[in-house]
Length: 171
Image (cartoon, rainbow, N blue to C red):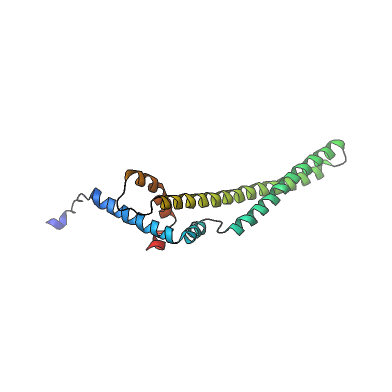
């Protein structure tokens, strides 16, 4: 008769003390790893980023500058085309053809510029977040219990670390 009816779900819970112990252990493992391997920690943060090294970031900055320069050049070219059309030295058909080509190139450049800038911004943010986490680790070098202040400082950083999979690095 019991097989006729599915069992009801029972209530599950975890004690606060057990949760505090788990969080404390996780923070200790991560902070120990960061203290002993700061460069490796920053590398892991960078590895999770689209741009993984300062050299790549520098190359992207150069590429961004070139794209921005070409975008500005195209603005000037399009303005001159318009002036040539108004003065009659350029036919309407030729103007339409050239302006369409330049505008297509400019639209592609705008997308490229946005992508490059976004990647550079994330690279910079990742470095800043890693630096802030390292500062917190240095602040709490040896601890045996979690205080509310520590928990508040670490919570955001724990979520960030979990996002990038540091569990594998600190096991």
